[in-house]
Amino acid sequence: MSTLPVFQNYIAGHWCATETTTVALTNPNNAKLTGYQASSSKIQAEQALEAASKAFDANDWSCLDPERRAAYLLRIAQLLEQKKEQIAQLDSLQNGVVIQLTRQVASICAAAFRASADILRSHGSVRYMPGNYSDIAIQRLPLGVAAIITPWNAPSGIACHKIASALAAGCCVIFKPSEWAAGSAQLIAEAIAEADLPPGVFQLLHGNAAVGALLVDDNRVACVSFTGGAQGGAAIGRSCGEQIKPVQLELGGNNPLVVLKSAQLDQAAAAIVTGMTTMNAQWCRALGRILVHQEISSALLEKVLSRLTQVVLGNSLDEQSQMGPLVHKAHWQHITQAIESYRQLGAQVLQPVKVADPSLADTGYFLSPTLVLGLAPEQTLEEIFGPVACWHTFDSESEAIALANQTPYGLAAYVFGEEKQAWQVANKIRSGMVKINAVSLFNLNPMAPRPAWGKSGLGDEGALETFSFFQGTRVIGVAG
Ligand code: NAD
Figure 1 (cartoon, rainbow, N blue to C red):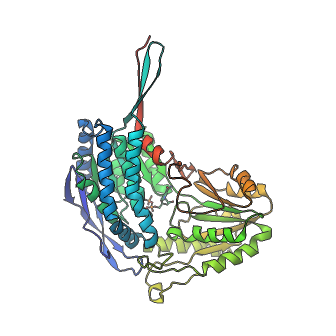
Figure 2: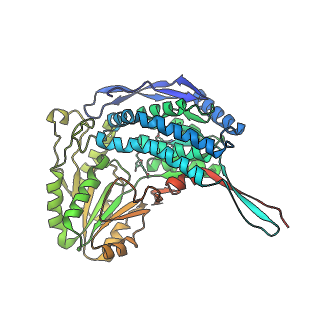
Figure 3: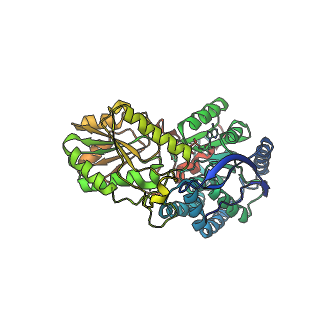
């Protein structure tokens, strides 16, 4: 699929035209125009808010028997399964992530709806405990209308995880996808529309940050689940704080990878390459800082560079590509400027990978995985959100731990070394997740939480955790 679908909003069970902006969308492989960002007027946002809030008040969804709600979710999963290749193609076309990976992300879509149906069936909405007089009921109830706001880097998987969890929890949903990668959102909304949920239970509303803010600021929205950058996260956090509105913020990271002296260097080198190239390192758990024991630093660097030169950097829609271009021109400029600032600070910058097809090199938004050496650790504290990793060395385990904990983030960390020693180090890293001796896109267990510490976010993500986020608790019992 090399063309974008027509962007439409889905409000109160009807498809309706969006507003079109003049912001161009381009194919990141060759900078050719693919369309324009879609947006929504204030009136359309108002219609979406009204539809969702009416649907929630009608109780047709929130009070629906869990088995029937689960059946709707399973139907959506079936429909998404049929669309997964198209979803993968659209994501690759819009964000530059290679097709072999967007296929894996697109498989998460149906899986997320199936997992939410399972959770809904297995977690009853009420449990009992003894009270002073008789048993008391502890009920879990949907919070109300949920605003779901998602980024461009893994747009389909992130959206389906949140939407499925919110619907399973009994919330009505307004979904605002990223203005940069809304193609797959259109297909996800089509699948949900085909499943024929009661009108108003699910809305798709296109637009940028300003449209997102209309949802967040409105008191008909009971909760917000957001994945994105620090700036948007802080603005949404402020608004929700003022309103005392539950908010889940999944933000960025500057993730450290620690290589102890006891590490197997080939294993560590392979993992570093994975961490710098998977999803073009436009991935919140990609590598930001590589922290290596001084004595093995040169040997490891040699192995990493040798492996990097094997990486096939090419068209994201090409089956052979292992890494594709960055999402759009402004992001490419932002990353290349960040590299330039490191150079100005005196860094040595290594960019060993060339674009496989030289005819794309000058037009597409390609960037070699980039290693930055020679800076002080204090100079590399912020997230770059691209294939750029800063290399630092340490002499002792305690120094390695201090460096791993030095940034304000706490999303993911990786430790390489003899397993017992690696566990000891992992136990001292302040991070939501620490993987030992591997880097991979997927969770250690699909049911494990995906927490965030520090500036990386608020409120754990995860199959069960996100479902629980969309519910509140009520306790009822006879007093006496
Ligand atoms: P972004 O913050 O620019 O945009 C994300 C979404 O939020 C978009 O839909 C955007 O329109 C909307 N938005 C932005 N500001 C808003 C505001 N003030 N009010 C309402 N809506 C607003 O992020 P991005 O550039 O799309 O994504 C990249 C960022 O996402 C990176 O920082 C990355 O680390 C982070 N991310 C985090 C995770 C995670 O699980 N922690 C996963 C993926 C991406």
